[in-house]
Image (tube, rainbow, N blue to C red; front, side):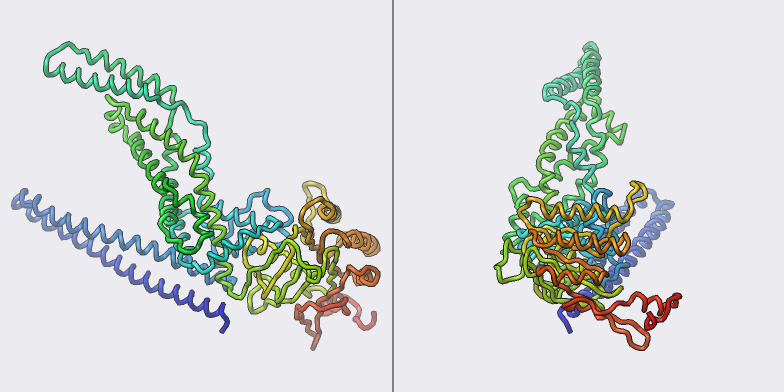
Length: 610
């Protein structure tokens, strides 16, 4: 049994245990529901019988029944909360199992990528969308945390410092799951928590707040009015309170119009602010122990001014302001006392302070969610390894070297891993092979693993060492009907951008991946253009891999020493074609297009006659 299989069995046992726990809690909840119904009906019957005999006895007898019912409600709520927590944790563990099995149906849905983020690099390597690398890796509860992970995967340049944090988080399974649990419980029914409205409210220029002088003057006028009302009733003095009350009302209305509505958006944000408290509170109270990188990242949650406390104070203010929803209570509170002015003044101060602190707290949380996603990938795949990304490699070592490199989006039982190395900058690996032999998948394997390495995560390899590169791909080129761009012209523009990136003055060399160069034109011009373009790629400050069907191009390796040929092959036995997806040195010795046509019954002459 492999380490991954052993870990999978542990998770499946945890899911089964949580299922049993859920069944027990559900049964207990049903018993509480039945007991509440029995207590309620029994109480109503007993009180009704006693009421006919003596109403006073009925009222006294109502108290113990109501007390028993209240106790049952309290314990029933605890059980219901336990069911919710158990269900969410069960879903988290089940999602881990689904990720290990690549069971896309049971992996939580992928987020919708903003239109501006769907650039060719993301499309070429299946980084975003359904059944993508991001879909597989992402465990973030917040949309911003999920998008931050996508930004890391699509950065195309390495961040070596991030790997230390991911390594530290890998064994902290309880920390990661509890953080996700608290976030999911806070989200309730939302798929991803969004911070747009909250940060938008904090960044809004506030309306003029009530000044302390205005509040003091209104308080004095209100208190004076109350005093004059008492004196009018007790000492029979003239109704001077009408004058003070008129002054109070005029000042109140005048200042209210200048302030506008201080609470217009704040009420809608009370629940999102309250939901953040449980997440932040967990990060404040967690014992970080020897995990110094994690503790340093979460430093803002350990400062003297704790985030959960600040959020609690803001929600208290908003609760005080919520009396506006009860017009009768609101009118009574503001009749002789400037309640809205007090609450508005305190809310303005809390909002300014929160505007300074909350973006930093949210930034740490989003960063932590993205890091936990990468750490979770490493934990679920113990056969993955953390790559070594270096500034420069010794001259006798390849600039890129991987052993047993595989694609993380291919199931374990069908995945084929290959050893691969790029000896030096300025070199080009040309891969030929038959249709369906695995050329495009291998290019994506290289790109996806570099994206994981640069993001700070593990890679699907036994070992991987790479120079720090920029990454450029030209794999899935598409035409554009709306822009009037043909497939060939779109490919030409992408390949021109690749040359410009290769020649750019940048501290990092370029790692490029090109699939089926110039496939959008005729054979003669494709061959002429491909030869010229490949000559322009070599001997520059970069290295890369190019796949092609054109076997005529393999002769370039005889003319240019920086070009090396590799290929994928197939075998045909008993009229069936099979592939082993193993990368071999040298040009491909066979083709299979006509064989595939013939096997599928297309009107093609027998291959041996051609």
